[in-house]
Image (tube, rainbow, N blue to C red; front, side, top):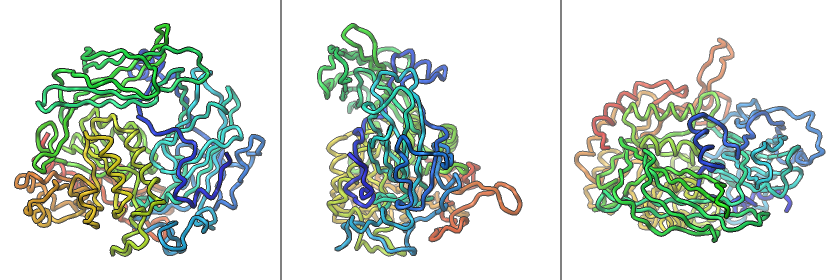
Amino acid sequence: MEAEIRWLDDPEVFRVNQVPAHSDHKFYKRKEDFEKEKYENKKNEWQQSLNGEWKFWFSQNASERPADFYREDFNLETFHSIQVPMHIELAGFDQIHYINTMYPWEGHLFRRPAYSLEGYTPEQKSFSGAKYNPVGSYVTKFDLEPGLLGKRIHICFEGVEQAMYLWLNGTFIGYAEDSFTISEFDLTPYIRESGNILAVEVHKRSTAAFLEDQDFFRFFGIFRNVTLYGLPKCHLEDIWVKPVLLEDGQNGEITVEWKCSIDWREEKSGFYAEFALTDADGTICWKKTTDLNQPVCSLKTEKIGQVIRWEYGNPYLYTLQVTVFDSDGQEIEYIPISVGFRRLEIQNNIILLNGRRLIINGVNRHEWNASSGRCISIEDMKSDLKVFLENQINAVRTSHYPNQIPWYQMCDENGIYVMAEANLESHGSWQKMGAIEPSWNVPGSILQWQEAVLDRIRTNFEMFKNHPSILFWSLGNESYAGDCLAKAQQFLKERDNSRLVHYEGVVNRREYADRISDIESRMYETPEGIEQYLKQNPKKPFLLCEYMHDMGNSLGGLGSYIKLIDYYPMYQGGFIWDFIDQAILIEDEVTGQKVLRYGGDFDDRPSDYEFSGNGILFADRTEKPALQEVTYYYGLYQRG
């Protein structure tokens, strides 16, 4: 197969040759290797990071790019260097640009989504033929580390904005869109022990741009980790652990499903696995051994007996330890998965967690670092969680895309409730200058956009389905409503009955109210408006997915919302907009001092200017005075 530039223009092409989405579990050669990584910070020998300095070339558009740069004999002497991960704009290439609802090209050119209006098709070459659609051409060379030799090799890109083509040793490997979820490819047929040449071509915009119109700086490039994985001869590639807290609130059950892959070069058979559930002290609560004789299999539901519940304030985690053996009884793979027993349900139109009314004292959170943008570190995540725990914040909405993988595990460990949002926002396609005008809304009910949306929902679900912290799957943000999102809701409801589905945009299309979202979710509704809804004997509990927009000297009215908790059981709280300012720390041209610059400060047009600054923290993570208000009211009405 050859790469085709026309894929940038076609909403029906969004993944080519990718490994199917699967659970985000880690795997090791043996248990001792896991313990060395956890306690001694030793590297997992089956992982090889490709982060670091890559060769790089920037082009204004596809026609100007070095199209043959992936060839093994291509001369890279004129190429620059760039760090991976990093936003291309923050490396000194291209225009830094912040915009909220409008698409970034509005006012510069006329562009409409393919199939949204009569006459608009991929043949228009809206992105592949654009005069301005920057391209980053990346190349790195590597040898396989000893722990990966002889194994099947997968490569994992954790985040690439916005569309990427991949080659290894001159051979086209695959294509991916969806900037904030993992893109994984099998390199095995083309990998060498040494002298490998990996080439990645990243286009700033494709049809995915219509689905990624979030309120943020519009960056592009490889901005999250790039990692090689060596797979054992028998590998559990996907595991779904389904813990259930029974109605009595005391006892638990567990079901495990998995997908198994065996190296096609392997002559042995007779692989088997041991599943052991241990408590926090390492005591075995349940154990089972089974053959791995089918590619897809499961263990029937097993009763565990009395369990400790997972919840805010007491995030008790068990561990499912999975050990794979070959026919000689040799350990060949070890997988640890955190397990939390909790029960989420709606009774009498009230959301209950572990039998008690759920109160969300939450924030929306963009991933952000003032120096590196959305390329954030583990230290940034730890800092954010410290602020959560010190200020009575018990929930987070991953606005408006899947976050880095470690964040979900950290929320598991710290008892933070997660609304896990898929990477979907098409705000500019239905709201223009504040008015609702959906004449060319995507995805809407347009069949050609449906699979791209379902893929984003499916990938988000498959990756993070094992995390007890996730209470809600969110279909995305501010994308109006239509059959595509109704199909996405249907997929989640058929797959996962342990969580609720959230989507706010159905408020604009009430005809979908019975088909989209388990919750009445609104943005910035007044306390009076909430009361009016709750007094009408509604069908759904009420949640504010965004409120208390913390821009300037804001947040003074928080108490008027919080007091509703005591009067209306169907009111479940909300998520403040938002946690941290989006601003970039740069050196001032006059004073030489480091200063924070917001939207519009980079001659970026169109722009929403300082609208990028509405967090309870400044972009450098300095606390704002508004945080005191949050701490007081969230602490006063905290429900554990």
